[in-house]
Length: 199
Image (cartoon, rainbow, N blue to C red):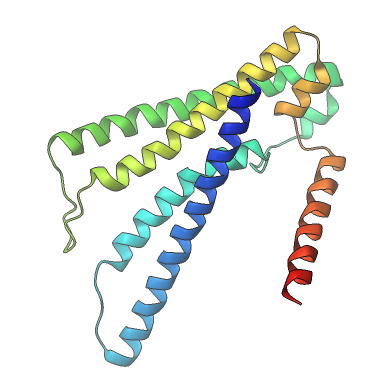
């Protein structure tokens, strides 16, 4: 299980980097498009379509990483009022509901992808993009997200059954003040080391 968790973290980190690069590339193309429109009075064409695909793919590719690092928004008013031993049950319910939603989106998205692939559907745009390509990349992100939800849910349920409340909270609970502080200090240390290496 530990190896699987490490492998999942590595995959999600790679995906979030690729997602970030996709967004940067789209922003660069949009910038070029703006400059060309301003000074040449013409357009490249298809940039809005490509940037739409980039936004969709990069978003789905970062969902799993955000979940692993507890970066998704959670409404914790009721959560913090509950006794600590009851909080893992709310975490399990939250992961279950999120998993059901992700499974629904993945199921229907995969169905659309399969149809696009079977019929070789293309976008009704000048680029005539084969739709299965952006749809497949988008669905891949959702599949990884769904897998991470299932992995965290399994870890949390096992920890609760074994009576390890602390482990369950560490896996699926809210980020503690100590964890947030450690994350910020880690970022500061990394930036400090990067600054020193440049000098």
